[in-house]
Length: 261
Image 1 (cartoon, one colour):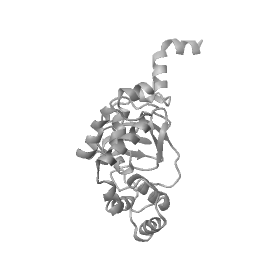
Image 2: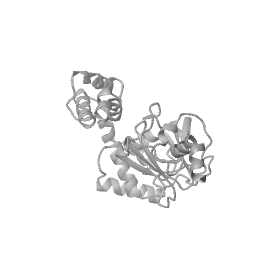
Image 3: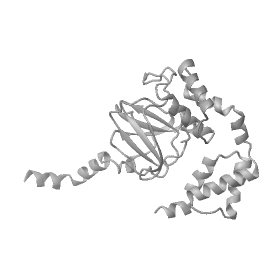
Image 4: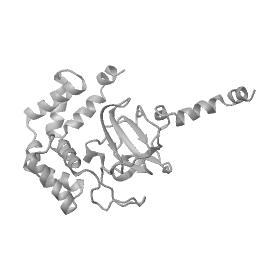
């Protein structure tokens, strides 16, 4: 019978097709390189501003576990067509997540640099573009002005940079800057980084470094830090590590990997 003949001739090709098109198992096919960009989908780059090697994937090709060598090393995202990308901090679409409808030139500025472990790709996105886009080789519109919800953008900037919700005067100020003066999200973030509150937050004392390490251990490993945690305290004070750096390193530890098997 024809159906049986097809199965006997090409079982390997059939399985390979499933792996390439079958959603969450696409991760095994991803490798750093310089492939042709898809007509619809997204490419994920090692460096900011779409630099360095990259890999690409299409709508519906979810990556439940970004492979070793790619995991926690993505720094910018370029989308093609009406693609929507949702990134997750943990494997299997768990943990912190965020949805993007446009190009992301620098994930560090979004609080995500080198921190994502699983990805969903969808097409048919018709919602607002919550990120600013510059005109590049793909000739996408943007012009530097916002085209999303300014309140949401300001809140996200406060949460990422000052680790808190905006106060009413601050929300009103930066909303006006965006609507009336055409500020971009980058300008809002830069203004927050120049604030006295941010400078005070980033003056690292030993007590503050120990508090960051304790909070990171509890968040990632679910326990109090041990004497070996002194290494992270030193990095915070001497090497200007951030809390995200400590969390990233703890997530790379054998203890964390063994807990999540």
